[in-house]
Length: 135
Image (cartoon, rainbow, N blue to C red; front, side, top):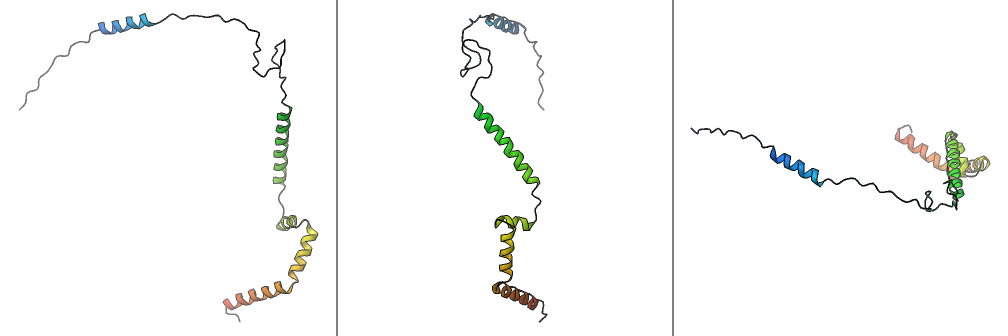
């Protein structure tokens, strides 16, 4: 049976940590404050049209950007209004396709009174009745 040996632990030396702290203190450099000189450049930015007096007011030519933004908002409002109002029936939507109610009425009258449509409807009804064995 093997014998276990016990080894006495040695206390850690604190001299190493003191040396590290003293080295860190030696490597720290003092903070230097540098004063900057005031220049006559405008602080508004490169595209500033301030001239001699720099008051940083908006003097840019941004009228086109504002116009596009206003038109975008108007487009969103009108689209939302039309979307909420779109509770139209199927007849109204089909009338939009053929440019009005009168044109749709004329087309539907011509379609339903044509011989080809009447014959196609008769054939489809007879085929359905044959499937049900009613003939």
